[in-house]
Each structure stands twice: as structure tokens, then as C-alpha cells.
Length: 327
Ligand code: MEV
Image (tube, helix red, strand yellow):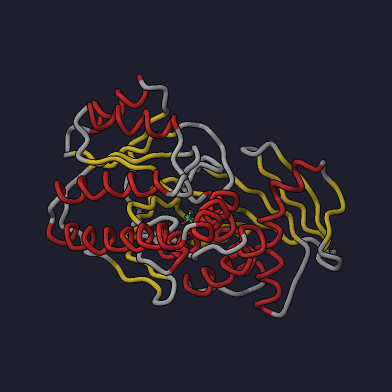
């Protein structure tokens, strides 16, 4: 028997970085998915492999250490191993397993690939141990696993990947579904510049510590952008959503997390008719998003490609984590 789970990528429309400091964010699950297959072993070893990452490594649940695999593979797959370890801890039982990761989500690009892999690993491994966990429980376990890898995540990535849909998220309050009347298409432009979320979060923290009276108001303003954007989305006012995206990009630039390549794609999208454009996720490379009127996404995607980016139209995904088994 093999046990599977799949969960969606995320796209932060508003509020990244500020969400770490308990400001609200607006997040959408998108239809790229990370699928994980798990089968049991008769020992305490967890073998993890991912063709997309070109990595394979083995960890021992009894010591918590890697027992085989080159250093690069161990580093890439350790987050998935942490997800297995945290699931075993949360359920009070464990078993060795073969874990195979197949992800459509580009890694280190701001689309939440690591959270989606963790969420799918947890749901599939729990199912192998005989437990079908509700999405909120999967999300909580994923948060514990992500904490070790990412320092102080806000929890937004594991939440959206577990529950799917379109939400407003606030660290101290949890999430709320957004009923959006807005009719739009979203183009994601990938710079293909990989970066570390942990380092970018640390960069903002250091800037905030050096200049609290300057940086705190910017973080707070981003929270207000999310609140206004939620209103505009509910009212179907896409012009306002676009304008607020532009302001949000400017604020993120001020926090030092944009990148020349992201700015280039943002300008190209705007020139091609996007209503608004901004970086998404941690920044420093990775992806940007452009808000388009229905029927205009193709032109914006072309402009992003001509400016050196890799565009894709992001379809919303109402479905969060799902798990199943196959003989
Ligand atoms: C990363 O996807 C989003 C950040 O706000 C970090 C976090 O929320 O943990 C940059």
C-alpha cells in the first residue's frame, strides 16, 4: 500500500514580511501542487527522494540524523524529514518510510514550495500511520516543522497550503475566508533567482532594529494595505486592488526585499496593461505577480517573457491538502 497527499502552492497578494509582525496578509492558493507518496519500511529509517530537486537522502528516526546522501541532498531534504519527525511526535507513534516528493512548484521562488512539501509529507505520513488528519492539524504540525528550518515563520504558508482557497491571515488571529467578487486574472513572473526566505526575513528584522521609528510605520502601512485590499476584493473593485498592489511593492522595496530583476518585471507588466504588480513571497528574487483584467493576461505574460522572466497564469485552487491511498 502507498499513501499519498497533495497540496497547493501559495501566492501572497498582500502583506508578506509585515505578516511576520502580526499585520494581516491576503493570500490565495494556486493550482500548482506538491505531491508526496509514502510507503512503510520495517526499520526506523526514512528515505526521502525528489527528482525535481535532484536529491536523495536517508535519515534515522531514532537518532534524528542523516545516515546517507551527499551534503546538498541532506540540506534540501531535511525540511521534509523534519515534517516526518514532527508528525511522529504529534501522533506519538512512528515507523520508517520511503518518501517520494514530486512537486510542480518552483523551489525558493516565493510560491511556498517548502510549506506545500511539508504539508503533503505530514498528511501522507500520518495516513500511513492510520490517521486522517484535518487540514488545521496538518497546518499546525507543518508550522512546527517549518520553525526549525525557517526561524520565525508567520504561519501563512503552511495555513494556505493546508486549507486552500482565498484567505485573510493574521498571526495572532488565524484565518478568514475572503468572498471575492473581483473578476481578474493573475500572472506570476518568475525571475528564476533563488533566494532564502530566512535571510530575507532576517534582513527586514535587522533594518527594523536599526531604524524602528522608520520601519515600523512601513510595516503598519502594509497591514492597512491588506485591510483596504480585502474591502476592494469583496466589492469587486479591481482598479483599487491594482493600485494597492503598486503601493505594496513600493513598501516592500523600502524594506529592502525587492531585486532589480523583480522591478524590471513589475514595470514590464504595468506597461503591458496590468492594473497592479508587486513581488510575492519573501522577495530578493523569486516571483512577482501582476493583476490583469480578464482577457489581458496573455499580453502581460508576453511582456514579462520579453523582459527576461518566466510567466505563468495562476489559477486559484479552492482545494487545500488532500490525501488518499493506493494498493
Ligand atoms: C514568505 O512566504 C512570507 C514571509 O512573510 C515570511 C513569513 O510569513 O513567514 C516573507
